[in-house]
Image (cartoon, rainbow, N blue to C red):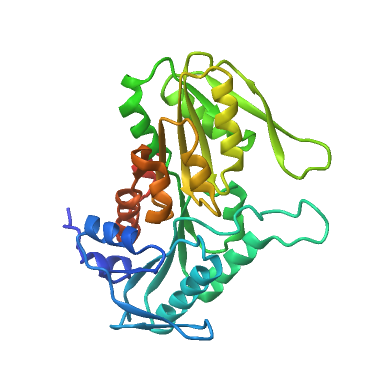
Amino acid sequence: MPVPVTFPRHERMGYGDIKLYGGTASTELTAKVAEYLGISCCEHDVIRFPNDNLFVKLHSSVRGQDCYVIQTTSAPVHQNLMELLITLQTLRLDSASRVTAVVPYMAYAKSDKKDQPRVPITARLVADMIEVAGADRYITFDLHAGQIQGFFSIPGDVLTTFSILIKYIKSILNRMNNPVVVTADLGFAKKARNFAVEIDAPLAFIEKRRVANDARAVALTIIGDVQNRDAIIVDDEVDTGGSMEQAVKLVHESGARRIFVIFVHPVLSANAAERLGALPVTEFVTTDTIPIPAEKAVHFGNRLTVLSIAPMLGEVIRRANEGRSVGEMFNE
């Protein structure tokens, strides 16, 4: 029987070594990913001119290499998005073998459909720009709506922090009293149900309606029982904190014993951190898809737990570089 011929990985796959670039919005996350992979972050200059134009210059050639740009697109959204696009094009023009846009938090994800006349579908526009800028692939986490994957013509990996959050919830279950999972938004109900199934807990829903001509949704009632239970309120992101504030107050008024707030993307715009920090919440749990500035984190005190996506992201990057299945990580 003939002995199979083996080749070095980069010759077998046609891609070079991993070159990891961190955008200015994701420097800490990039450093953690690099540590997981056992490599160094590649250096590059990002210069912002007085007229707000951005300029990117690589410190070394990436010709024939497998490049990954980690840049979240949280506030300042347009500066971070343009930096991502310019960096992608810089790598493409320097003849990188493959360029992957790693966007932990995708801006404009809520603009995913025409739900009224004369409005754009900006999520599609962002996907087009990433592709046109030079990305061959993309990686992102917990999109607001699954159909956004269809806006990309390039392959990608849409990851979820579900396993990370569930692992943490299970680690603190022994200090919870008769827990119940509460979804702050019916749009998140399916994922909330999965949370409830994993920890063998009941599920409750918060009903929200738009009253009168007010554009804001108001939390009216809870469908389910939270009386004398520890409530775990889950959501995909917290932006202004308005919906979460209403949810916490309603759950508290309904007799919940203690309240835990768990969400993926800490957007925390305006005074969201301040208003959430004032709520009767035992613990806030989120991830580092978006960095939380110290001036915002201080409002949570020692009640804030930030779980890192770096190990998961690092393993996905390693598997993508080696041409191995990402689904195997999640038993898929």
